[in-house]
Image (cartoon, rainbow, N blue to C red; front, side, top):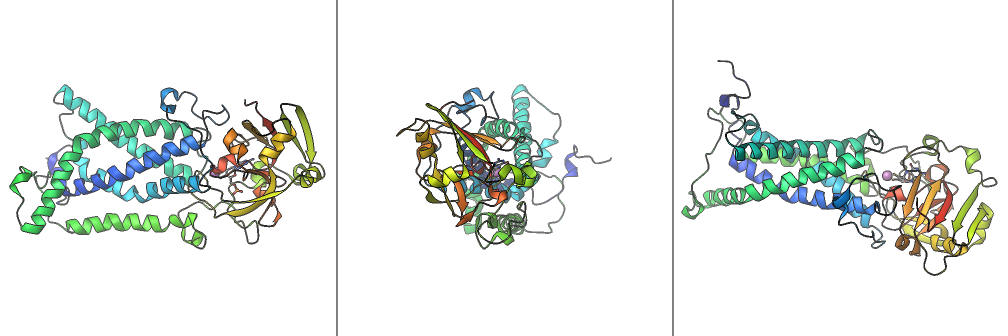
Length: 419
Ligand SMILES: Nc1nc2c(c(=O)[nH]1)N[C@H]1C(S)=C(S)[C@@H](COP(=O)(O)O)O[C@H]1N2
Ligand SMILES: [Mo]
């Protein structure tokens, strides 16, 4: 008889079994919970409830129930949450694949459903496996080939996350007691040579009826998975650490920023954004600021005559890379608000850049971000005029915010009236 994945004897690894599945399951329970929480935080950090401009998921409905005003402290907050989200996600890839491998025969068992309950269980497994693969694949593709899905990554990854985590939570609630018991039994067995009677009947050691002889021990298999994770971690984490950036060979680097004051990572260059030298010329450029008392137009020289302040702030991108603190110098956003009639208590702010196309050319900032004295319309970084690629003549920089809210090549600020 020809063997297909549907015949039980097709699967012959002696490693597949409750032990491996339980260990990997416990690791994923912790890891995926952290991914879900940091992912929800990343979503909140964009202030999607503030303005349609920030909101890529207008149909979110109740799923936005937890949104809150993203704080400006500590100033490295998004660096941390998004660094963890992306680095941990990449690190868990071997664990996820090994876990799927350890249960893959179950996906092929026949008949497809023995009862309604069994049918529901298998449907939830489909959501679990499909949802998990979908979240990891869309996440990695967004990091690697950013903007492969222009505008659609956020809804795909966001709604996918809820579907996946729903199935994941149900699965964990069902299986965790068994996994714990299996793990305790294994420990007991290793210590005393026999499983304690309190732990109930032993699970079948191996679901494959006709296993091949082993080529690697259970521990060896775990080392393989752990080693793969360690390798991915070691080639990713450098994207958040000065001095280790060279090691982040799996992380996207964008344009080479070169050395000097502007020598830190660049996401999109001025050329990519279609910003020419004439657009940015300090003689021609004007900043339009609108608020309660009307509109003022400021030249570069006008801005330089306003009080200038410095703040040390990082750039942290949704893709997981971040810079250390850079020294930005410019005009406080709240001082610009005061120029157009918002003294003391500045409102929300809508920022537009010179850029004509592209989803990140505009962003809305919340009042708490505008009010923070470290939030600047920066003209300088690390003691020099901004480079073209870092947003010359002026860019927004806000503590703890995702990079996407730090608009470059700013042309217009509108206080209080969000689109
Ligand atoms: N006008 C404009 N500003 C922008 C962007 C953009 O595409 N256009 N990209 C944003 C994103 S996604 C990030 S991560 C930061 C990157 O800043 P950097 O290139 O100076 O490091 O700029 C932000 N500001
Ligand atoms: Mo970004």
